[in-house]
Image 1 (cartoon, protein in one colour):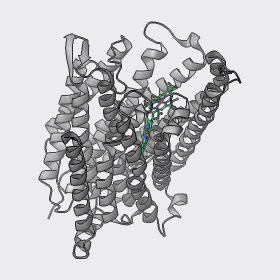
Image 2 (cartoon, chains in turn cyan, blue):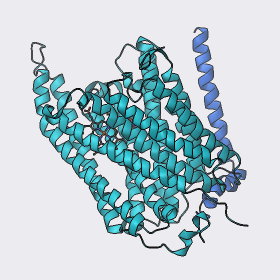
Image 3 (cartoon, helix red, strand yellow):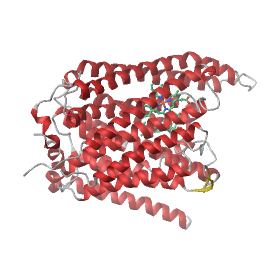
Image 4 (tube, protein in one colour):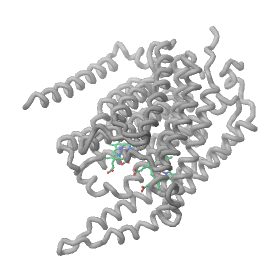
Length: 471
Length: 46
Ligand code: HEM
Ligand code: HEM
């Protein structure tokens, strides 16, 4: 029986575009880090911190993160279902709409149109584009799953479906708004309800965009890279369902000590702590899958990216629940500690797993061996060192900042003024910016390696050529 | 306890029962091979 003809050109296009938006995100990230050190680098009205920051976060999460999700889901679903993508035409339309949406988002954000809802800043016309984009993508993936040739679904498919359904529900509910002009709308939720819905969306965006899809990739690329199946499929299924049951209740941990009802805060706190179990279910499964294979950490650069990635995920999902405890939150909330947490997740977990996936795909979609493994190793060390400098400097400065804010004199007055605490942050912001530059250099090495693979990579071993019916 | 709280509790309990059924089904000895099969099948080829 012949192999199905998988579509790989569309995967190539999504990989390329996600790389473009990834570079934009990191570059703007470096720019905003320097703007925090030197306010003269703000050029009003467009190139100010206030306008560039949402461009950084949206390009990072939606351009780079979701762009990679599009590429990887389309690649993985065909192989895991042993059937070609349901509709290539729809996927091509999706590619076009994806780029149009990212560009429209960047332009409107630069012009200052902003709903002020974090990670949902775009105004209603762009929301409509996003809804169409996601529906088109979901239909294509779900239809491919429906007509699959495999009876039992591999764990990655479960995570993919959760992401598709989860994002659709979260985004739609948080987008409910009354438009009053072409670029202005008002959320139908007000006051504490608005805050509660926003963070129910916000944290579950973390779950459905920055956790479930990278887990789908991790469970796919780790065994494919080591050549050994995962430790336990049943454990992965239980971890999946418990993650799904628990995540949706945790959003209010972003709103501890605010006027939302106390019981909602307590509920979020309890579920956040419980989340350690399903998160570590995957981490342990990953580590156990390496039994007898740890030598591959030395010999196989893909494994290095994946195992460091899951390690950052493990740390992230211990740190997160800690931040969700009221007393700890009272200390670190609003401080630099929180961006430190976020970037261990985004620069560490999400990006490491995504680039491992891209390296894995290169020979399979371009029919060429990766140009230089030493360069891939250099890329690895630059991004890991850059990220560690970034996050560690922010954890230290966050604690310092919190300590200074909380310091009181004997008469109950504050020991430090806010400006004094800001001045203390400068050295750490410098260190962070340097970490960012190191990370950026790592990304440029990666892009060079990808470019040279496409241009000059050697023909791979015959087994790899079997894709796209070349064999 | 008002009706809303009872409903809330019922939904939570319902979810817990569903989860317990999933765990039971996944770890049933009879199902072991079937539930572990996908991890071998996915290794097939690319
Ligand atoms: C060299 C790499 C990067 C640099 C230099 C950088 C820099 C920054 C800076 C300076 C901020 C503002 C922090 C503040 O307001 O105090 C920020 C925020 C943020 N960045 Fe990055 N970033 C990088 C990579 C990424 C990537 C790859 C992603 C996503 C995939 C990302 C997602 C975010 C998010 C979600 C926030 C919002 C943080 C918050 O609300 O506290 N960043 N980044
Ligand atoms: C068990 C899992 C996790 C828990 C319980 C958790 C908990 C938290 C908490 C409590 C905050 C709020 C901190 C504050 O503002 O005081 C937070 C912020 C955040 N976390 Fe996590 N976290 C988890 C995993 C992750 C993962 C895997 C990522 C992936 C990148 C992530 C990304 C973020 C982002 C982007 C924010 C910033 C939201 C904002 O802009 O305020 N978290 N997390």
